[in-house]
Picture 1 (tube, rainbow over the protein chains, first blue to last red):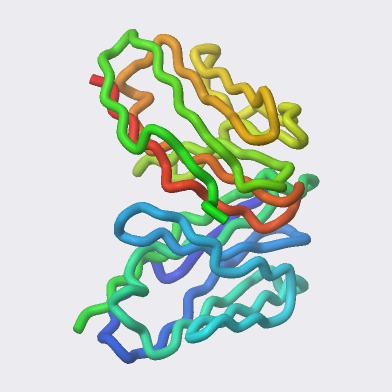
Picture 2: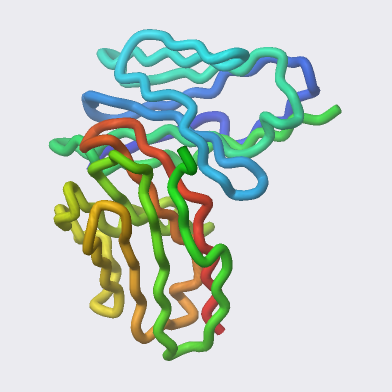
Length: 110
Length: 113
């Protein structure tokens, strides 16, 4: 099946700093989603981004499908950004069986 | 919209007991997914439905697991009999259609002793 790798695995930031999270995938995909799992375990869909760039407040995401990667940018980080960030892509040949990366664990400190 | 609603939030049971997890998807969403999350294996897709019909159950670990979707607003995941290794957080998610953005419920944390 498709392989999804995320980097870095762990990240500690001071409040106000910016960061870039990366997601590499091993096969061509027709959609990609970014999720945030907060410290209470809730999984929130941040972006549905098959290609191009999208922005939502302090967060933005870019997917370059031809080069098989996506980036999640967090600007002016806040403590509420802490948690685990996952990217997910469909298994090869399907639209809905998502394979999740192992995540980037982010801790934002005061 | 209330989002995807799961119940119970926590379930503690003894080995051998039957466990039933419940899910109400977002109104109007045609696809429903059951996931399991553990530290060792991360997020795993167990089964998904489209228009109430099971499409792929290849992720269901054993015959002890079964899922139903009797109508567009309700689904259950049943484990019978439960075992300690079934302990995990079980998430239900829904989307408007196949290949669309996925929205998760808050999960059910299952502990089997």
